Length: 340
Image 1 (cartoon, rainbow, N blue to C red):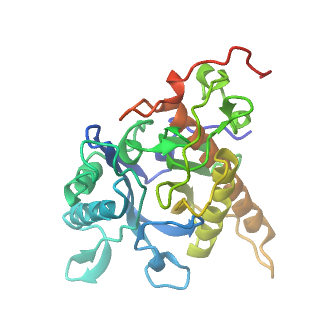
Image 2 (spheres, helix red, strand yellow):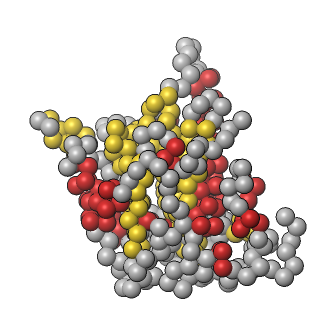
Image 3 (cartoon, rainbow, N blue to C red):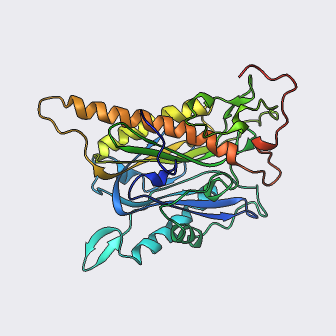
């Protein structure tokens, strides 16, 4: 039976480190996902208002085979500056695409979410130093969730969003995990029940009793162009090609669409990266069609969707109020809750 990894986090995937830079007064931050040994990477963008950097090079037909980090950033278009700090951090350690004579070009794709106007100034002071700080804090242990890093100023359907993470160890021994910064236009909570849409995806009581509360939601916010976005990283220790990693990223979006409704709207920039650290090969076989490998890849993609949905729920449950934005934990209970 599939089970969560020991930390139930993206860091359960061997070779992955996670660090946050959080500025509560600015209501913004950065989350760095490092893979110092390199990881095969892909990206799938489903929202119509994305803010991204270095995503074209992840296409299967393009040259660069691996990345050294992915950055998830607050600050909307201003947040992409944080990736410069990650490049600087990695270059100082000799990590990147080799250029000869000991020189490297660190490959750091990034995506941003909209959190402008939620802190002490309309534009948070996102900078290369924020990206460098998040990288310096990256480690392989437990990952802090909620109103931290890229999720510091996040809002999801009118309540506080945040960062969440989850993992699965498959029967094959392959690990799959997700980390998501939830700043969605849609809601993670079913307005008919007052509970998360994906409450049934819970494993081993990970959501806690909080998720079983039936809450009264505030009125949904009016749609506004470009002010939302759910961004994240799914990862696996499987050995994947860029095309296979792309398929996993595509399947992971199914979890996003189940956990956030509506998703992939004209007002969201929903973007998911996939990282494969290559520690465990898919089944080897000969023949015209590799049935076993295709089945294994499908299982990884399905697990990525499950982890993405669980990470989104965990993000909202862990979030704390900031800048006057109410968190799920502080919403009033319904007087007559619906059946669980």
